[in-house]
Image (cartoon, rainbow, N blue to C red; front, side, top):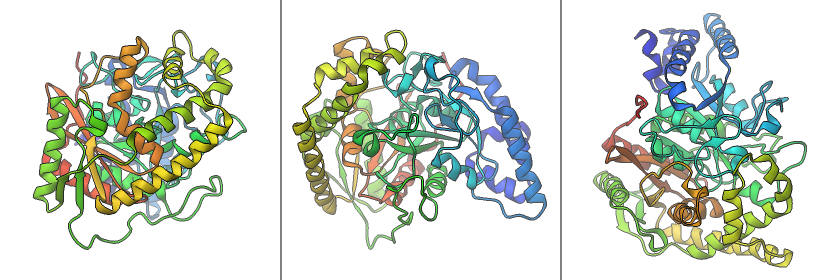
Length: 472
């Protein structure tokens, strides 16, 4: 197999390293060669950690030779989004202001992936400060290109990870999601992605010593991207991990599998969330996934309107924009040229509210969560689009109010599920017109296991679409 180890999925790589069929150093070197070959065309990896990765790989090889049992992700390289801390490396948020902001320690999800044997290969690109838009373009590192087609965005805000995984630079990426930021790049790049239940993984999203405000605490969750659902499950199990983490007292150490289903699960299909005008290609991907699940024994039916959908969208926007408004005069200066446009258009669409109204919205959220929990008693799984339209041109969400509204409407199901806090897995539903179309399977609180099981069924029917050679 030689230098082609970069083509292999994480599960295969880790098994080969544990068995001694390949060294972790050889695995890392193979991926570094792939980065050298394709990153100039994709620009997904920002800070390459080549020497550190080789050192960590050599240590794994010494431990294996000494008879030590290695972890489930032994020797597997992964990228880490620019907003997530890797010890001794700048956590830049893609902003010039933070280019020398060296992290004193690993963020909790990096710690857990390392404990499973995975090796950080580098940071990955994202929109500046996670706020400059949906397309992955940062002040420090420029644009990341979709390896399927440079004329469409790889999505964001974890677009660097999506593009790196899709083009074979790494088998795993570590992103985060607060309204589709893992799911959108997974869908647009033809890979799998997991948005976990709020509180499932320990996290630390501080920028400096102070914790963020409520919306940034409860809507943002870390999540992996991978080329296969099997790899997504391995990384999910590593990130959930055993026991609590004192750095995040909110995280709940729930078992990663909560027993087997007693019969076929009912799947509610939502091809047009909130009455959206879903593109025929996207509808075809949802239909293909529904057919695969039905053939596998799932009870598949078109679901009625999702509960309190518009209420959730309105409350989500109002809470987020209100929290941004207080610090916006400072944050605006960090975003580089035109980086402010996306959030300012968002504020025009959903104006910040007063304190009394904000406090009322915290109660509204609980009521919507209750409504979803009751709805999902009938539909333990929901199947719908990640984005109701085909992948769009880079940056249109920041160029005009029309583009901004188009993207916001197409992402509505992602926004609502982040607001509610339920888990979702994105998996490819096929290739249409030369571009991948992703679907998402949404589960009940802490039932990532059922989402992953269903996603594996879809993947078995559709197939694994990546790695791809960069095009355009």
